[in-house]
Image (tube, rainbow, N blue to C red):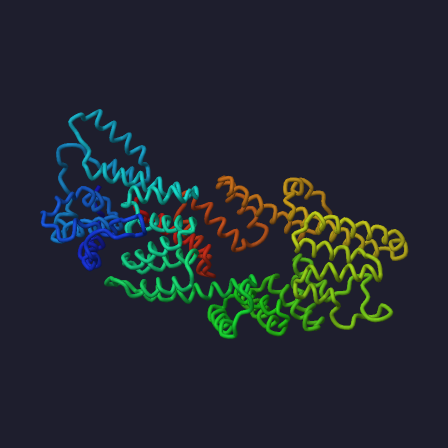
Length: 592
């Protein structure tokens, strides 16, 4: 196989520049982590008086012949480190006449494709056919290394963390800048084994010795899962300044710290862990979210203020999220914020585009609409401002919701509307079995009240009864979904008295559940089939987009997986999306 004309200029540039960064490195091995000493840039003993070892250019010529720029560059760097006086041969890109003997290219190709067992078998078969032939030492060495690297990755995929560290200790060469994915896996193993010092030492060596800015950036993202903010700041400083390489733009590295800090603040704001944010942190988040026009970030800020009863700020951020990316989630937030402010008319106006189309909006409207049997002022007149139940729903305090419903039922008796609202609050509290019973009670109460009402009210009463039956059936379906009763629910779905919108929503949720289960069972084609079917019902949310990326990845459709993760990460970068982008990209260019 010869090089194409278009690759020749690229590879020529590799020859001219590959050794620059390596020449700046000290000779000798580096301790990537305590107990695992590897040659990031292997070199003979520093100060050795012996002659340099004979350079084996077999792999170098193979990479040049097939046009593999990544491996060619790494091999040039490795050989320069072995012998600083060595220069790449001038005829490296000149087609070579076939020398007598056996062409080893098929064996190298099998290794490059990750088919080590097939490569071993092919070598054995060649030796049987040509008894006088011996495979080159470089071929056997690289095959051993490829097998150990594969074992390390398999152990990592199986979460056998101790085995990962044992393999790296026995074969340090599998962990290096040229095999960065393996190094990340080793650091992950240290992190999972709670050996934070070893993980930090490994990450520190990688951001110091691996010259590519993108790899240093991705290493920082990986490290953020296991290291403290202080350690990450130290790593970022090193990654931005240590051993710079010509042509690398380290500004992408310096931005990582800010992105990670913003991500942490958004997480704190969203989960409530760590207490209230400082005014400085809030200002920083608000500035970042506005700069990115980040609808998800605006939603996070809206709920942060809503939970603290700062309803005006919450309303402003929900409105901003709805402006950047209209959704029923943003409408839900607006409704509840207006409810907290006592702005009933504005809350109902925000709900209009989604009434009857979104369960979350229909539930939120209950914060401002008075259910049947729920009196407000004295004598059953109109409510005077938000009731205790309104306020509980507006701040998503579902325990307070149950308390308010119990108090109202004690005064005026349990009604169908109150029982139904009780079902939704039980759903939110993770009590689906009780919720299903509450929706059944709502249906029973409505049925009892409809006997006399239908005769008196005629068609309108019958219409209301039908709508109420649909609402109760919908609530029970959601409760069954939450309880994991998916198989029976899928069977019963065609016969349930649901509106088209609610039926589509339940079907979409069932498909999402089955897609998650298919991925867990490693049925990747089924995962994509189920996600495609769901996407015909409604747009694919972010979490299922990540799921789609991993299904593509495990089907070895790596470029498609990379594009899937990248499109999600470009909209909003999170640890999950960055991990997908990083792993897919490294797999496309992974060394053995």
